[in-house]
Image 1: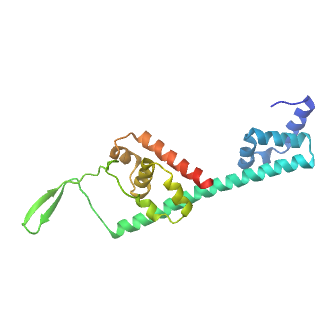
Image 2 (image 1 turned 90 degrees about the vertical axis):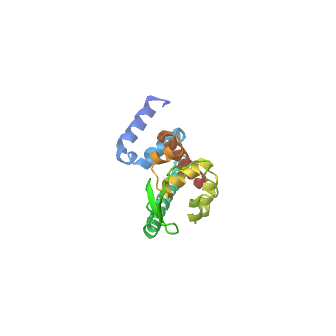
Length: 198
């Protein structure tokens, strides 16, 4: 921070001390972290004209709207995932399916037991067609945002939120590391948020 004089530094320091409680608000802290906003704030304190105060208020209003958007999108994604979890649990409770690594079924025609080995591995190349989760999305903006994801990002979101696989299980299924799957998942969520804000 540069000051034109020692007097300016004292004025600013006195103001910051006097309003310490208000300035500790996370919203205000986030606003002042931006260098441009801080310069506007500093100018309004050192040269308290109506125009300078209005510039700070305008910039702070813009910052508040941005924070509200982020919070709204974050809530939207959280509620959609909770809603989806409920649908999956409801569906799973209606259609119970037990898959063992070695299941034995009775062949009614031949009267003999047949062995059926089931594999939980999901190969990326095998996965084709529409992502199931898109059929569940009713919000058009969220649907468009999902369309912008790569096939792998969409697949990982589907397996994580809709198929209820853990990051570790997805890593095994896609022959990748849990860290890589976690990074792709994080990028996908970030891309969704970015698309929904714009």
